[in-house]
Length: 169
Image (tube, rainbow, N blue to C red; front, side, top):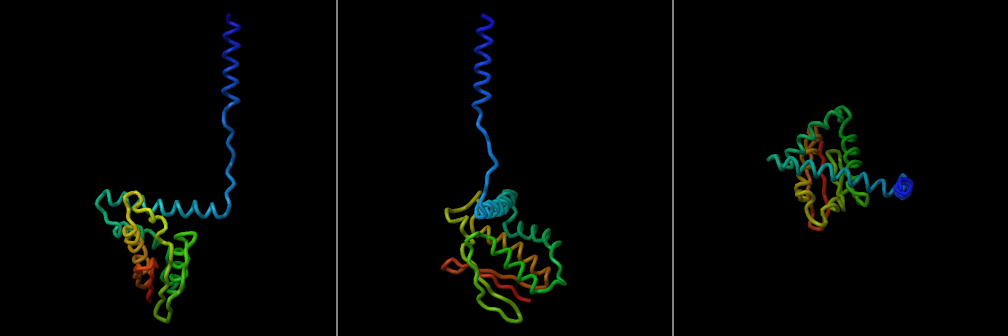
């Protein structure tokens, strides 16, 4: 009887051990890697805004807080051209399918516009954060960085969905 019980136990033990799912390391395409990074960047920003709002801090003020942290990586001596080039690079990464166009530029500044910045919000707010909250958060960050770089920043949304950025010396 003991032998039968032990045999049944061993049978189920081996069945359990050998029936476990085998996991494999995922092989992501470059597009999938980009999408994962984009999704994480948006999620971290949006959940930060959600947390700030739950503590009575506006999205813009939270952005200013982040901007003050970020200025440690921006050197005013690098000049306006570096600010513009880095800002265009950063904002171009707001969505993998982002479109960017330079509207105008002269010695005093640049205006460029982006499309698809709002892709994460097409179905409405995320984590109780609206697209306008996200824009206010972005304004808080970029305005602090621009001021630190001896420049000004303004932004607006057009009716046809373009996010327009103005950077001035």
